[in-house]
Length: 169
Image (tube, rainbow, N blue to C red; front, side):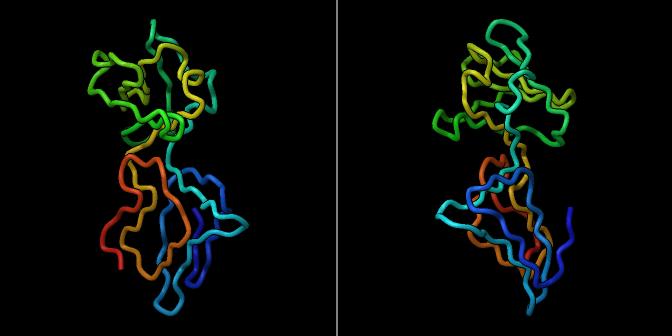
């Protein structure tokens, strides 16, 4: 995590994908901190605090016919949603226990074991070209910050709010 001084500008390349939560920092009334895009074109940079489960297909483990698991050692919070093919094939249905996984795309997150379970007729990384696991965190956190400008960024695949926090000015 970097520290930004008042008046700093944090620039994100257009069309780029930036994984993890963006935690804003405070500027001053005469020197706000600016978070914005740079580069050519209209596509905004994506702040994307999700896990790309299609990036490492060898990690998927077949548990039984139609049931797969994926261990996410880095996840600190609840996995609240799965997004299939950037939303073109919808989202997963979150279940409260493994025994409820009945239909294609149903999933269960075992926080204690940091393991995602999903119902799929074939290996999930083969079934969906893009598979994002959205953790229940805000995409951009603005907790107790002030004097910032956020412009030209897109936030996607957060299972909490795109922008969330308290007591921001």
